[in-house]
Image: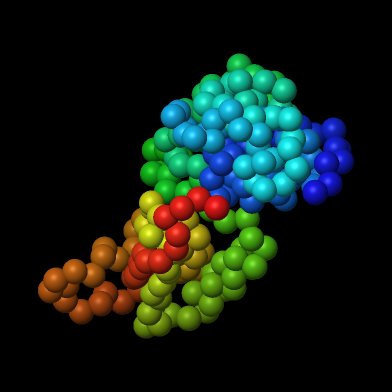
Length: 221
């Protein structure tokens, strides 16, 4: 793996997890990774972040304290979980971090508001999906919902591995939000409750979700 540096120093939350390892492999090709975290008691603590991602050693080890992990960082990347992300952002206020990239999903409206408040301290990018294709699809869904009337039913079906902790996924909710915008409303107002029991006929104009969780490894790679 190339370790060339653009001068931008990065620290990664959850460096030993699947997403953390992927971020290390991708970001390490163009940026300097100077730190990362793992949860307290995790076996990955103290291990080189590059080795955790099965690439060359980077000279930075995983620690439990985000402030320590970010002490030399310009940018913090966090794809963990809402509560952990908010706790970390608070700890980062006293560091040199200038920007935060947040890809964690499952935020409640209150947590979203709390996260947005940190934009006064950091330049921040927070979204449920960073894929160009997914964002293009969301735009197409919004246009379709705009042009098709409420007699056209909208149902979003998504499947993730068994370890996914939030449902519907952030990506599925992004699709629902796009559909709601197309219909001139908010997803919170148009979303159907889960179908369970005698629910009656489907209400026209509502947006429904179907969620599956199955498969995938219980082991970290």
